Length: 210
Image (cartoon, rainbow, N blue to C red):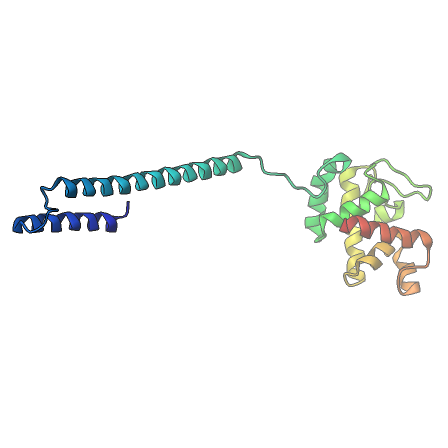
């Protein structure tokens, strides 16, 4: 019940009391009809207030239950590559990405398409490890064991960063240079007309944006 309504009832009762002192109203304070009417009105308001209070308490209880359920639900975990073989290399990828200012997703995209996360991979051309470094390139990058996952990712990320700097952040040209060598990209002033390189750039970009 609102305070205003209660005040009105008290005022009505007070008026009835004042009226009773003059003896001019059949609805005086001592009149059974007045007292009954007042009690019925008061009881009706009390019942309404009780019902509203019960509904409010029920709503609050429901909200508290929902809030508790949300709070107790486990939060989903997000990583660049959450499952599969990629997860075991996440730490090395994160370290290399931070060191060379690269997006972790780009490093993962290159690894996926170069070796599919096989650190012992070796191509027919002689490229080695996760990021398929050629022996001469690996040596120039300071990689002593290209089949060591941490060294290979460190070297591959460094080389990728160099290519991005060389081509002013152009990711497609950097990937083409990673695959076919910067000499071929410079010679053709763009992605070389090699089917393998063109497919490689497309696949890595698709993986990156997936």
